[in-house]
Image (cartoon, rainbow, N blue to C red; front, side):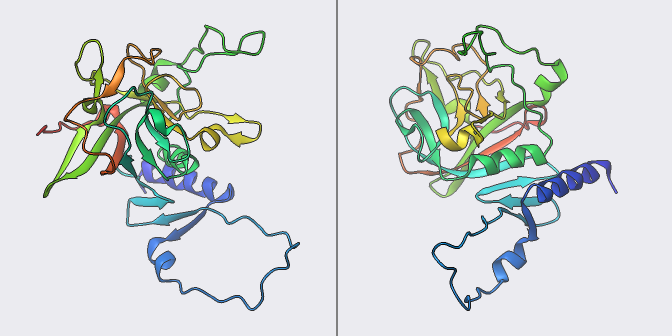
Length: 264
């Protein structure tokens, strides 16, 4: 068996041990509902439902609304255009999050997205998350991260949508404009940081923060480029972003394997 597949199956088994059920997609869809013979009493404790990892085909899997490919290490999830004007601090937030400052919104679980990153062996790089100060707040210092971890945590984020009868795909950076320079965001990569657990809960599940332009330790993904600490310079690029309500698939892949994209 190929070493990559062995590593993936090992992590998949760990996911099962952590409470995720792994089943073929067909069995999840074809299983007929069963009417319970009796309902639990109101005071009866009920076990939480375990998230299900569905196997789609030889290399692709799905957890919740997130699909991921073991072979290409590509992750996909559905979003909707939320803003075409106004200041941006986020690329993607959950629909219950900071929607007044995010380009896209989604209903997926951040936990499911983070599981996909983990199963595909993306190492989180905490380089953009400030270390705590002696007084409990954030300091001006940042953790040292090995160069190989930084490189492996670099990702590309593309957007795919229907434009008339055509399916179009672009780097999400092309949808973001610098308010002062009036140019598109540089084509550099994004950083998977993974966020953190706070008070026993996964922070992105509480905040809804998924992919941030203005650095947010609560987000899974952050922008590492210039002006990442300025919340007054990033805007949706006029006439490039489709109308509010347009369905968009976000596609995440390793930065090192980006293929050329033909721009319309």
